Length: 412
Image (cartoon, rainbow, N blue to C red; front, side, top):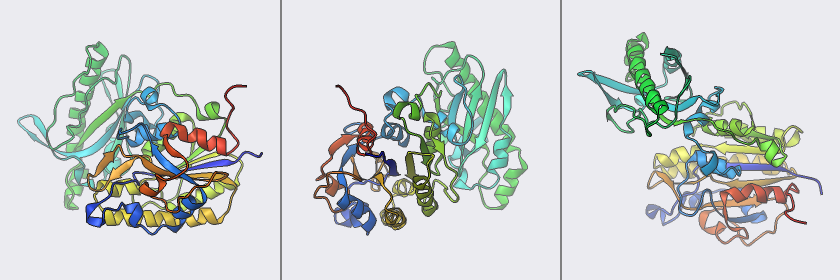
């Protein structure tokens, strides 16, 4: 039989727990979503533990697992993926961090954080980020502003280690010195370098004329950079060598773009894809349809981030509306009736009530040449009745490849 293309549609953090204030239903159970339900009804359904039973996944480790890369082996910190997603190239010895612009006050030569996100105001951040490319001793600091109040930092030099603490205190209050997490000279040196970067960055940013402009616009100063998630990129097998497919990523969020770059997927440039709840979802589906009709890519990964962002805000109604927005544009994909295997799922559960990721399994539905089951609605409880049973995230790609005539027999 002819091999089919594969679409893996990940609605970030879409799964949830029942909410007492909404008749013990989840947002998926409340939402009007005929197209997701169509995939469930005409496909095969189940539940999936992205990492393992009861383990709350990060979006980074979950996406690695769903691409069938063991996160316990290949995850070395979020920083490298964020840097790759922002368009930076990494050497094998580079140390990468994810960063926030923040607001700090200096008292008695100590720095205190008053706002970890600098009011989320984006004005002037790109220019401020450009000021943070400088030399610290023999180490080159490379900084790039990414989305919103975020940025990425790369330290490039010899004898550096990712085994250091964050400069981000993760709460308001005094900034603590970065410390080595082991006794190696490289860790001690890297901690010292990052401490020097933080202090020098504060002096540069705090004295910039841009801060006056931000204050005039009613924004707090963005006068310090907080770094976290140190890591090296490591050696990761390429997706096409591992699975014999050429893949493309359709996403707005830098983390997913970076993971895709790390494993060798192409990254599509999508108009209006912001990586936030205001993202142009329709343009992502249009890009998917174009890829399905083309001959360049066999595997298409789509990430829609808005469901996760709204969950972290604790907005049940907003999450229902976001699910319905996604469902509306899904109609275009289903109307095309293209001969492909389509999987609909989430990378993790994000509870609106807790406002954080949890270890609950996520629903998954696969449309294609499948043994259909008795599931007619796409939701956490309904998919639990499906023919897939309960699978691990690392199993999903093998299942999709087998259903697409791309699986390899094990044994004679």
